[in-house]
Image 1: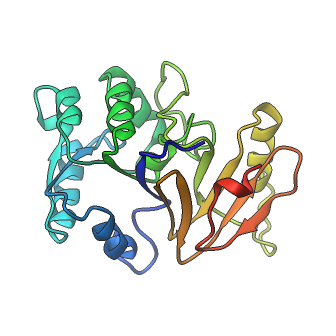
Image 2 (image 1 turned 90 degrees about the vertical axis):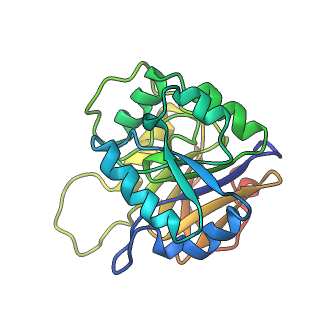
Length: 237
């Protein structure tokens, strides 16, 4: 079950077609972060941490929130412990997890989230909110100590979920086929989160929100759709 104190905002993608960075969730994100004046940003999913932080700083300035990159501080763990809220951005999930492991940030983020600190994740940042990164779409460009992540929710997430294209001549595996293969090895269900969709977790309830729905994968059951506004956990079995 989801911790009743967790306050999570988990976005499939930072940018969707025709919109700017986080534009599609700007209003609900501002509501989620109401009262927060400063957010700690974790830029480890991209190589250019300074450039990434500058981009995020500019976007959050429009929400009236100051941004501090944890890499800019002498002690990233202390930055997490003192943070009003944390945002982990997208990029490569393996690189992100490696640096979270190397910097010793998994425990502090997990502890602060358990205290009710708002946590925002996007793409790779949403992947690491799950028990593991086994359902990421990314290439393992670096070697992580293991695949275990924050475990802030009890289910896996597949951001950027793509439905099969019936007109495509591509013969590779579809996303659905890959997630079904994952379930052959693990009983933990998966929420396939389409572009523009996001999950909001509060009071122990995960609600699917955004412009598009999601697809749920459970071992021993056919994949099925969930619509915007639905509570997720009761559907996971």
